[in-house]
Image 1 (tube, protein in one colour):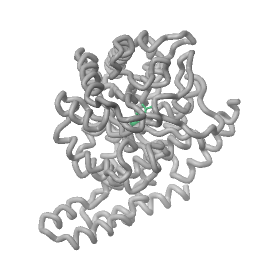
Image 2 (cartoon, rainbow, N blue to C red):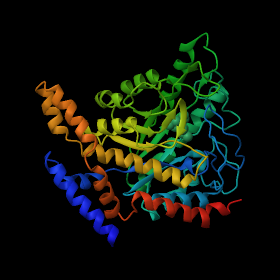
Image 3 (cartoon, rainbow, N blue to C red):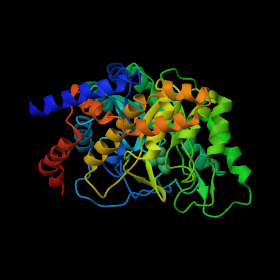
Length: 419
Ligand code: RNT
Ligand code: ZN
């Protein structure tokens, strides 16, 4: 009770403070209801998936750490995601990779996957009030090699084309079943360790493969294409570079996925939002945190994230930007990793909503640049954290500090027993 009262008291003071700038905090709390995050299923099990032949993680991505308690089965993963979601305010989506199908212990190769393998996921999601998103999986397979959809070898390329077509069909079925479009992300690692003698060749093949894959039209799924700077072991050339997918997306009306770890470290991903909004239909985000490279650290509330969130809000683009998470840390409690990253993302969005943007833009229009900078500085320390606490309380999730003990309890009772 004490806690509830102090959260309320701080909130009331905060609303008064924001009123000075003409910001209606209650309305912002309403707007937060529109924010739905797509939780990446692969944080729970270090991108392993449930193929019976499940092997080593390949394709230029790496997970570091071996903290105990990784989810080893569908049931464990579902329980972990449900637990994580219970500490994240609002309605969530779950982003599945094809390798997380319910294969019932059978070997189902990637070119054989069917919507039926996701029937239990669709049911589980419905029962738990979640929507699903989807990803084709071209890594961690004997045919992954260094080239998949851009492979000049017909047999290998066609195998991956078939896989990706099937994934689109699965996404469509998911979309129909949930009455909401399923976002399907396509990321392939294709590239090479050294600079190829013919860069154009593989990009031309990738373009043709994509055209073939996207030939079937669906209305309950949306295609997203994700670029990347480089992969481990594939440092010199990436077939699906940002230029490639930006060009493809702009020309063919596809959604470009911006993974915040997939750019040069000093490049601003936030700065790309307004351009993409002008030339591509929507935007898919993979919120991640690169440290020195695309290391996929747990997302935290840093300047990059705040900047990204501010751009979405300033562009009034919440309905065109899909916010997915994409990181994998196996060095700490994995449920904790979900909760930290998702809550940080929500905080960034809330803080962005509470920015006195009308006044900032007015100063700018009037050429009052000292005033604009001063207000930006003042905005940094406005009491948005009091609004955050209220947001959590009104959504029946605990404040930050209480998440720690709750996650410790789940570890003690559940994940630590997975040996
Ligand atoms: C890899 C990409 C890709 C993956 C997931 C597992 O660098 O970011 O999105 O992380 O598909
Ligand atoms: Zn990604």
